[in-house]
Length: 150
Ligand SMILES: [Zn+2]
Image (cartoon, rainbow, N blue to C red; front, side, top):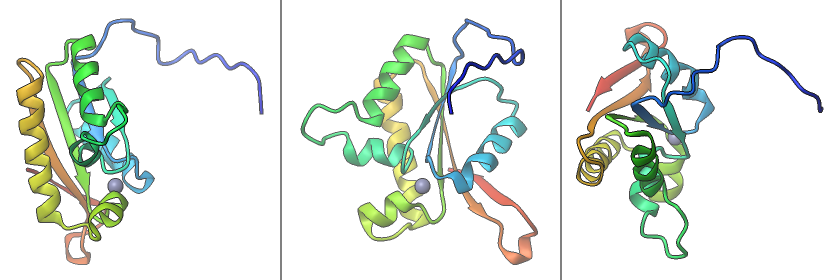
């Protein structure tokens, strides 16, 4: 499929936004993630979606070869866009954790979110970092997703 499409909405705004969201690229959680962010009053934001979200940044940043890891990419983006806030999201049953560590364990993921927040706070001047863990609601919790701050 090829062609040219013009979108009238939203209207392009050339100003940068002060918030970066770093989340997993898992499509099972993307819509819920966007809904959650809107529920928190967040509009436009920079988005770094990669397998494992910030976990990729933690575990792969020392990989030899000079690739721009998620951590360095977030740091670069924050510098370019004068970022004031970074929002980290991790989720249940994350394929990155299954592949990298053999299991997606909430406590491990929450600890990693805290480690990532510390790393970002250390490397990005004057940034505030919020971290959240998302999981599908259990049967007795109703429908949808549960998001808890970490
Ligand atoms: Zn994931």
